[in-house]
Length: 209
Ligand code: SAM
Image (tube, rainbow, N blue to C red; front, top):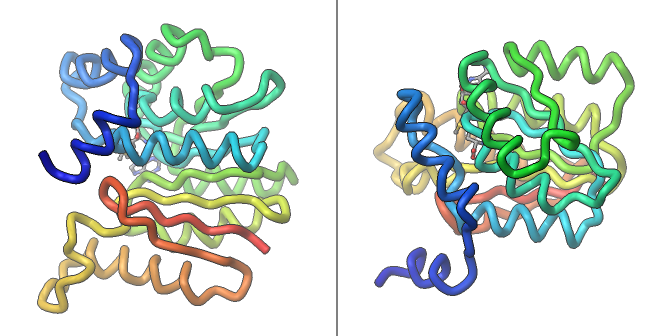
Protein backbone atom coordinates (compact mmCIF):
# COMPACT_ATOMS: atom_id res chain seq x y z
CA UNK A 1 0.00 0.00 0.00
CA UNK A 2 1.35 3.48 -0.85
CA UNK A 3 0.93 6.68 1.20
CA UNK A 4 -2.01 7.89 -0.89
CA UNK A 5 -3.93 4.60 -0.53
CA UNK A 6 -3.24 4.54 3.22
CA UNK A 7 -4.56 8.10 3.65
CA UNK A 8 -7.60 7.46 1.45
CA UNK A 9 -8.53 4.19 3.13
CA UNK A 10 -8.38 5.70 6.58
CA UNK A 11 -9.64 9.28 6.07
CA UNK A 12 -11.66 9.56 2.85
CA UNK A 13 -15.16 8.13 2.93
CA UNK A 14 -17.06 8.46 -0.34
CA UNK A 15 -20.81 7.88 -0.28
CA UNK A 16 -22.72 6.42 -3.26
CA UNK A 17 -23.16 9.83 -4.89
CA UNK A 18 -19.43 10.60 -4.90
CA UNK A 19 -18.63 7.05 -6.02
CA UNK A 20 -21.04 7.39 -8.95
CA UNK A 21 -19.36 10.52 -10.37
CA UNK A 22 -16.60 8.47 -11.97
CA UNK A 23 -19.16 6.24 -13.75
CA UNK A 24 -21.02 9.34 -14.99
CA UNK A 25 -17.75 10.67 -16.47
CA UNK A 26 -17.13 7.35 -18.24
CA UNK A 27 -20.73 7.21 -19.55
CA UNK A 28 -20.40 10.70 -21.05
CA UNK A 29 -16.91 10.20 -22.51
CA UNK A 30 -15.40 12.71 -20.12
CA UNK A 31 -11.82 12.50 -18.81
CA UNK A 32 -11.23 10.94 -15.37
CA UNK A 33 -9.45 14.00 -14.02
CA UNK A 34 -11.48 14.85 -10.92
CA UNK A 35 -9.43 16.01 -7.93
CA UNK A 36 -8.19 13.02 -5.92
CA UNK A 37 -10.23 12.04 -2.87
CA UNK A 38 -7.60 12.94 -0.30
CA UNK A 39 -7.12 16.44 -1.76
CA UNK A 40 -10.92 16.83 -1.92
CA UNK A 41 -11.13 15.97 1.79
CA UNK A 42 -8.53 18.64 2.55
CA UNK A 43 -10.56 21.18 0.54
CA UNK A 44 -13.66 20.16 2.49
CA UNK A 45 -11.84 20.67 5.79
CA UNK A 46 -10.40 24.02 4.70
CA UNK A 47 -13.90 25.30 3.85
CA UNK A 48 -15.22 24.12 7.23
CA UNK A 49 -12.25 25.41 9.26
CA UNK A 50 -12.26 28.80 7.53
CA UNK A 51 -16.05 29.18 7.78
CA UNK A 52 -16.18 30.11 4.08
CA UNK A 53 -19.64 30.96 2.74
CA UNK A 54 -19.07 32.01 -0.85
CA UNK A 55 -16.92 29.68 -2.96
CA UNK A 56 -15.71 30.16 -6.53
CA UNK A 57 -14.58 27.03 -8.34
CA UNK A 58 -12.73 27.27 -11.66
CA UNK A 59 -13.11 23.99 -13.60
CA UNK A 60 -16.23 21.89 -12.83
CA UNK A 61 -15.92 18.70 -14.94
CA UNK A 62 -18.59 16.31 -13.53
CA UNK A 63 -19.09 18.00 -10.17
CA UNK A 64 -16.95 15.75 -7.94
CA UNK A 65 -15.14 18.66 -6.28
CA UNK A 66 -18.32 20.80 -6.33
CA UNK A 67 -20.03 18.16 -4.15
CA UNK A 68 -17.16 18.01 -1.64
CA UNK A 69 -16.93 21.81 -1.43
CA UNK A 70 -20.69 22.44 -1.24
CA UNK A 71 -21.09 19.80 1.48
CA UNK A 72 -18.70 21.81 3.66
CA UNK A 73 -20.73 25.02 3.30
CA UNK A 74 -23.15 26.27 5.96
CA UNK A 75 -26.89 26.35 5.11
CA UNK A 76 -26.65 29.89 3.76
CA UNK A 77 -23.47 29.21 1.75
CA UNK A 78 -23.13 29.06 -2.03
CA UNK A 79 -20.74 27.81 -4.66
CA UNK A 80 -20.32 29.26 -8.14
CA UNK A 81 -18.45 27.01 -10.56
CA UNK A 82 -16.99 28.06 -13.94
CA UNK A 83 -16.80 25.56 -16.80
CA UNK A 84 -16.05 25.85 -20.50
CA UNK A 85 -18.00 22.80 -21.74
CA UNK A 86 -21.82 23.01 -21.63
CA UNK A 87 -22.12 19.19 -21.82
CA UNK A 88 -19.91 18.83 -18.72
CA UNK A 89 -22.09 21.29 -16.83
CA UNK A 90 -25.15 19.13 -17.54
CA UNK A 91 -23.38 16.11 -16.02
CA UNK A 92 -22.17 18.17 -13.05
CA UNK A 93 -25.65 19.58 -12.41
CA UNK A 94 -27.11 16.09 -12.50
CA UNK A 95 -24.56 14.82 -9.96
CA UNK A 96 -25.03 17.86 -7.72
CA UNK A 97 -28.79 17.27 -7.83
CA UNK A 98 -28.29 13.63 -6.81
CA UNK A 99 -26.36 14.98 -3.82
CA UNK A 100 -29.29 17.29 -2.97
CA UNK A 101 -27.07 20.37 -3.33
CA UNK A 102 -28.67 22.06 -6.34
CA UNK A 103 -29.86 25.07 -4.28
CA UNK A 104 -26.30 25.87 -3.23
CA UNK A 105 -24.43 25.31 -6.50
CA UNK A 106 -24.58 27.47 -9.62
CA UNK A 107 -22.66 26.81 -12.84
CA UNK A 108 -21.53 29.46 -15.31
CA UNK A 109 -20.68 28.15 -18.80
CA UNK A 110 -17.89 29.83 -20.75
CA UNK A 111 -14.23 30.78 -20.74
CA UNK A 112 -13.30 31.09 -17.07
CA UNK A 113 -11.25 34.26 -17.72
CA UNK A 114 -14.31 36.00 -19.15
CA UNK A 115 -16.63 34.74 -16.41
CA UNK A 116 -14.14 35.88 -13.78
CA UNK A 117 -13.84 39.34 -15.34
CA UNK A 118 -17.64 39.69 -15.23
CA UNK A 119 -17.72 38.57 -11.58
CA UNK A 120 -14.99 41.12 -10.71
CA UNK A 121 -17.03 43.88 -12.43
CA UNK A 122 -20.12 42.84 -10.44
CA UNK A 123 -18.24 43.55 -7.19
CA UNK A 124 -19.03 40.12 -5.67
CA UNK A 125 -16.39 38.92 -3.19
CA UNK A 126 -15.53 35.28 -2.57
CA UNK A 127 -13.94 33.80 0.54
CA UNK A 128 -12.76 30.50 -0.98
CA UNK A 129 -11.42 29.64 -4.44
CA UNK A 130 -10.59 26.31 -6.02
CA UNK A 131 -8.55 26.64 -9.20
CA UNK A 132 -8.68 23.42 -11.25
CA UNK A 133 -9.04 24.29 -14.95
CA UNK A 134 -6.54 24.73 -17.82
CA UNK A 135 -3.03 24.88 -16.41
CA UNK A 136 -1.74 27.45 -18.93
CA UNK A 137 -4.06 30.04 -17.36
CA UNK A 138 -3.37 29.22 -13.70
CA UNK A 139 -1.38 32.41 -13.07
CA UNK A 140 -4.12 34.53 -14.69
CA UNK A 141 -6.76 32.79 -12.55
CA UNK A 142 -4.68 33.51 -9.44
CA UNK A 143 -4.42 37.19 -10.33
CA UNK A 144 -8.17 37.46 -11.08
CA UNK A 145 -9.06 35.50 -7.91
CA UNK A 146 -7.07 37.98 -5.78
CA UNK A 147 -9.10 40.79 -7.37
CA UNK A 148 -12.43 39.32 -6.18
CA UNK A 149 -11.18 37.89 -2.88
CA UNK A 150 -12.48 38.99 0.50
CA UNK A 151 -9.69 39.72 3.02
CA UNK A 152 -8.49 36.41 4.52
CA UNK A 153 -9.88 34.39 1.59
CA UNK A 154 -8.34 31.02 0.81
CA UNK A 155 -7.18 30.19 -2.70
CA UNK A 156 -6.48 26.50 -3.41
CA UNK A 157 -5.24 25.01 -6.68
CA UNK A 158 -4.88 21.40 -7.78
CA UNK A 159 -2.16 19.60 -9.77
CA UNK A 160 0.65 21.92 -8.70
CA UNK A 161 3.15 19.04 -8.58
CA UNK A 162 2.00 17.97 -12.07
CA UNK A 163 2.85 14.34 -11.50
CA UNK A 164 6.29 15.34 -10.19
CA UNK A 165 7.23 17.08 -13.44
CA UNK A 166 7.73 20.50 -11.76
CA UNK A 167 10.62 18.97 -9.78
CA UNK A 168 12.43 17.71 -12.86
CA UNK A 169 14.87 20.37 -14.14
CA UNK A 170 15.03 18.52 -17.51
CA UNK A 171 11.27 18.95 -18.05
CA UNK A 172 10.55 22.12 -20.03
CA UNK A 173 7.07 21.20 -21.33
CA UNK A 174 4.72 24.14 -21.71
CA UNK A 175 2.28 23.03 -18.99
CA UNK A 176 5.08 22.16 -16.56
CA UNK A 177 6.53 25.66 -17.06
CA UNK A 178 3.05 27.19 -16.58
CA UNK A 179 2.61 25.42 -13.24
CA UNK A 180 6.15 26.37 -12.12
CA UNK A 181 5.34 30.01 -12.94
CA UNK A 182 2.09 29.73 -10.96
CA UNK A 183 3.82 28.15 -7.94
CA UNK A 184 6.53 30.84 -8.00
CA UNK A 185 3.90 33.60 -8.12
CA UNK A 186 1.98 32.02 -5.22
CA UNK A 187 5.20 31.67 -3.21
CA UNK A 188 6.45 35.24 -3.80
CA UNK A 189 3.36 37.43 -4.22
CA UNK A 190 3.33 39.82 -1.25
CA UNK A 191 -0.50 39.78 -1.16
CA UNK A 192 -0.49 36.06 -0.30
CA UNK A 193 0.74 33.61 2.33
CA UNK A 194 1.11 30.23 0.63
CA UNK A 195 2.17 26.62 0.93
CA UNK A 196 2.33 23.70 -1.48
CA UNK A 197 0.84 20.66 0.25
CA UNK A 198 2.09 17.38 -1.30
CA UNK A 199 -1.27 15.61 -1.24
CA UNK A 200 -2.90 14.09 -4.33
CA UNK A 201 -1.19 15.74 -7.29
CA UNK A 202 -0.11 18.68 -5.10
CA UNK A 203 -2.49 21.23 -3.60
CA UNK A 204 -1.46 24.86 -3.40
CA UNK A 205 -3.04 26.61 -0.41
CA UNK A 206 -2.83 30.42 -0.15
CA UNK A 207 -4.40 32.96 2.15
CA UNK A 208 -5.11 36.43 0.84
CA UNK A 209 -3.77 38.94 3.41
N1 SAM B 1 -12.63 20.35 -10.34
C1 SAM B 1 -13.10 19.17 -11.06
C2 SAM B 1 -13.26 18.04 -10.07
O1 SAM B 1 -12.32 17.83 -9.29
O2 SAM B 1 -14.32 17.37 -10.08
C3 SAM B 1 -12.12 18.77 -12.15
C4 SAM B 1 -11.87 19.83 -13.15
S1 SAM B 1 -10.97 19.25 -14.56
C5 SAM B 1 -9.40 18.94 -13.90
C6 SAM B 1 -10.70 20.73 -15.45
C7 SAM B 1 -11.97 21.34 -16.05
O3 SAM B 1 -11.66 22.66 -16.50
C8 SAM B 1 -12.52 20.59 -17.25
O4 SAM B 1 -13.86 20.27 -17.03
C9 SAM B 1 -12.38 21.57 -18.40
O5 SAM B 1 -13.40 21.49 -19.36
C10 SAM B 1 -12.40 22.90 -17.68
N2 SAM B 1 -11.73 23.97 -18.44
C11 SAM B 1 -10.61 23.87 -19.20
N3 SAM B 1 -10.30 25.05 -19.74
C12 SAM B 1 -11.24 25.93 -19.30
C13 SAM B 1 -11.46 27.32 -19.52
N4 SAM B 1 -10.66 28.04 -20.31
N5 SAM B 1 -12.51 27.90 -18.90
C14 SAM B 1 -13.34 27.17 -18.10
N6 SAM B 1 -13.17 25.85 -17.86
C15 SAM B 1 -12.14 25.25 -18.46
